[in-house]
Image (cartoon, rainbow, N blue to C red; front, side):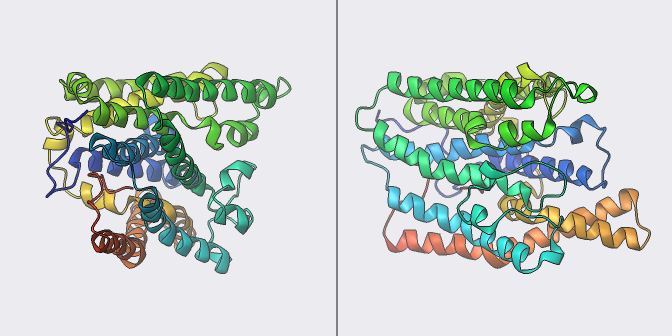
Length: 391
C-alpha cells in the first residue's frame, strides 16, 4: 500500500503526545503499586492494588511502537534495517540497565532486598525465566525488561520470515497462534502447578507458582506485546481500516478504561483463579490497545489536552522504573529511623525516586539516546518512526 497512515504526527514534532501521557500514567501506576509493597501507601485501595497492570501498559506501547518501526519500511517498498534496529535497541536499553546492575552487584547494601538472582541471568536477560517467586528478591522488577529484550530479539526474525510471502492471512494465523499459545500455556501452568487443594486458606492457589509459572515467564505474557503489534499493523499496513477504527477516539479511550476496570474486577486480585488467569491477560491487553489507539490519534482528548510534565515523566520512565524500588526501600528505612510515616514519608519517597530516576536519565540514558541519533544521522538514515519516549 502506498498511502501513509493519516495518524502520523508531523516530522518536526516526532512525538505522540497522547502516548507520552499514557506512558507517564503507566510509570506512575507501577510506582504507586510498588510503594504499597513497602508500606508507603495502603494496599487495600483498588487503584493501588492493580498497579501491576501498568506493566501491561508498557507492553502494549512497546508492541505498538516497535511494530510501527519495523512495518513502516514496507509501506515505502523497502525492508527494515535490522542491524540498525538492534543497534538502536542496545543503545536505548542497555546503558541505564548496566549502571543499575553494577549498583546492585557492587553495592549490595543498597539493595531493597538482600537476595538477588545470579548475575548471568540479568546479563542474558533470562532472569524472568528462572525466578522463584517469594518475598525478598532484589531487582525482581527487571523481569519485564527481560520480556521486552526477548521480544526485541525474536520479533524482527518473525517479521523477516513473514516478509518473504506476506499476506493478511499469514499475519492473522501467526497472531491467532500466539494468542492461543498464551491461553494454553497459562491453563496448563495453572492446572499443573498453581492449583493446590491443600492450601485451603489461599483458595487452593500456590501464589509462588502463580508468579513463577504464569506472571513472570515471557511465553505467558505475550498478550500485551501482541495487541500492540496488531494495532501497529493495522495503522501502518491498513490505514483505511485504522481510519474507520479510530473515527471516535474518545469513545475508544472510554471503552478501554472501562475494559481495564472490568478486567481488574475479573482478576479480583493479582493472584487469580483459573478463568481470569487464563483469559484475563488477553482482555486486559485488548482494553489497553483501545486506549493506545486513542492516544495515537491527534483528534483525541489524550493528545489535545496539555498535561504539564507528562512528556518529561514519559522520557524518564525507563530510568524511573529501573531505580525506584531501591530508592523506596532506602527512604523507608531512613524515614522510619527518624520517626517519619504516613503521607509525609510517601511524598519523600516519591520525591527521592523522581530525583534518582532523573539523575540516571540525564547522566546515562539521555547521552546514549543522543549518541544513537548522531549515529543515525552519520549513516544518512531516515529518522525512526515517531515515538512516545520509549523505544
